[in-house]
Image (cartoon, rainbow, N blue to C red; front, top):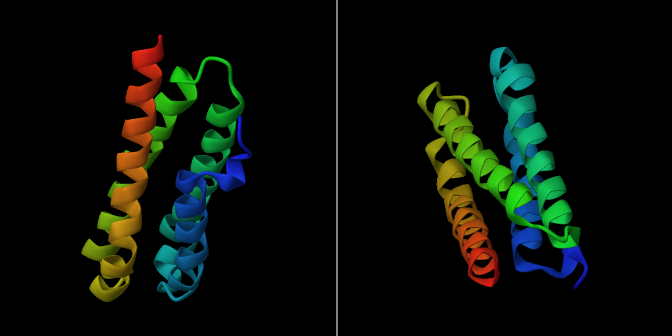
Length: 116
């Protein structure tokens, strides 16, 4: 078992968190403390679930939760763009990372299912 920090999915989620912070801080005040905080908390949950899945004997439950958090994250970013709290330019920067996170979570989940 490798350290969680060494995995590609962890590095992507961490980078997404770091890149999101200036975007959240630039959100209009009306969105910063609800939508922005929810994005930050969801990304922290994603990182936590990656660590849990990496360490768990049975990885299925944390990976299932990770895929749900990924969908929630996509929804939050889309809402942010729709209400113009996140610029399309910033969203375009984050989109490849969001997509990669989902693909890696799905791939990890499928590889675990093959083993079981």
